[in-house]
Amino acid sequence: DTGVSQNPRHKITKRGQNVTFRCDPISEHNRLYWYRQTLGQGPEFLTYFQNEAQLEKSRLLSDRFSAERPKGSFSTLEIQRTEQGDSAMYLCASSYVLGANEKLFFGSGTQLSVL
Amino acid sequence: DQQVKQNSPSLSVQEGRISILNCDYTNSMFDYFLWYKKYPAEGPTFLISISSIKDKNEDGRFTVFLNKSAKHLSLHIVPSQPGDSAVYFCAASDHGSSNTGKLIFGQGTTLQVKP
Image 1 (cartoon, each protein chain N blue to C red):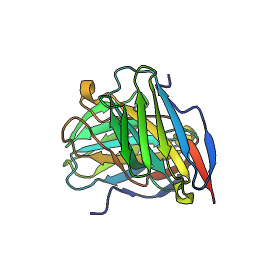
Image 2: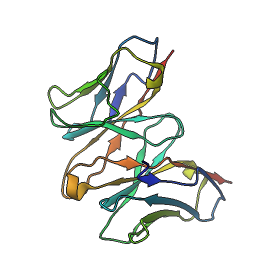
Image 3: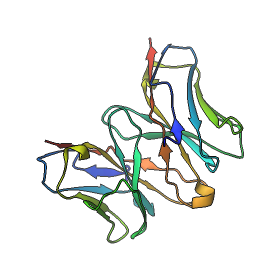
Image 4: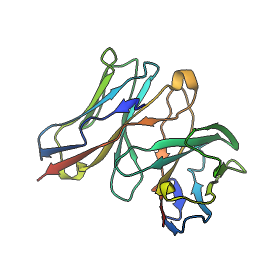
């Protein structure tokens, strides 16, 4: 297991289309996070799972966004009716909670361009 | 509301000299701080962290200093090497109170180390 894997690396879509991204975390990690990063900004938290339970969602996550982690392993992030403002890098991270401090390991991201 | 701020968008230093990257935060509940490094087309990579019970943590050429009263932390890289050229993100979490590793990131500082 070499780390967090995200697919696809790049996605170009037309406004109004639906897109789905996949994240495969490090196998023994029980927490999985989704972040979004736009140019010139740091990553912004979207949502996270502990095993298969989605425990927190940011107000950035509009009702067009949905994330799942059906068996507590891989996760998908779907954006419905994409808008140009959705263009960003979508990052997935995973972690294993042990003790008080938690370290996130990030994937290489999916770069979304909405035309 | 930017809870974590990196006020210098870029920094340029000569190889072999010290690089100092700064970060300020506003939320006094933050108890764990991390620095991530990001190369183009890759996800952020963990570099070093510090808990709020410490004021210094060192790992090889990298040292992080935390000043809780000033709500300020800094990353020192000594000596700087051309391979250190990347975007550096400061991140913070309130893990002790929230029991999540959700990270709040700064905007990033682009470091260029000139040979």
